[in-house]
Image (cartoon, rainbow, N blue to C red; front, side, top):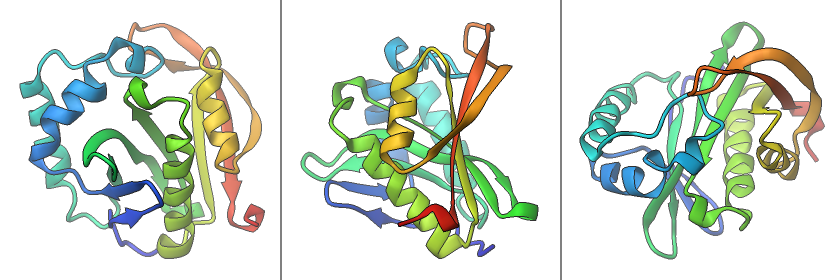
Length: 184
C-alpha cells in the first residue's frame, strides 16, 4: 500500500480535494445540517456552523497522515462544496478500504456521487495500490446501493443488525464491493 493520503482528483464535473476551514459554511448549509441527508447515517445533523468548523479543524489536522483519505466534493460549475467521500476503514493487511459518502440532497439523482465514488475507487486502486474497496448502506436506503452499482461495485449480501443509525436503532447493512480484478 502506498501511503499517499488525500490528493486532488478531478473528474468531468467535480474537484475532489482536501477540506479547508473555508468549507465549513458550505458543508453546514449544503449537507451536514440536513436531516434528510443524515437520515440513514451514523451521525446526527450538525447543530451549528461552529460545530462543523471544529470538526473540519480535526479532519484537516489528519491530512499529513498518509493513511487519511477524506475528500470534499466540489462542483466545478459553481465552486461549491456539496458533499464528502472518505475512507472510513482501512485494512493494510489485505489492502482493503471501506468508503462512506454523503452529499447535499439538492444534487441527488444527477449522477454526481457515482462519478465521485468511481474516481475515488480508481485512485485507491491505481495510486494507493489497494485490492478491494467496499461500501455499505442501510437496507432502508436502496438509493445509496444504486450509487454503488453505478460505480461498478457488486452486491455481496446483507449483514443483519450490524449497523446503528443516528437514532440509535440497529439496521441491516447491505454490502457492495469491487476488487481490482473486477475493473473493466
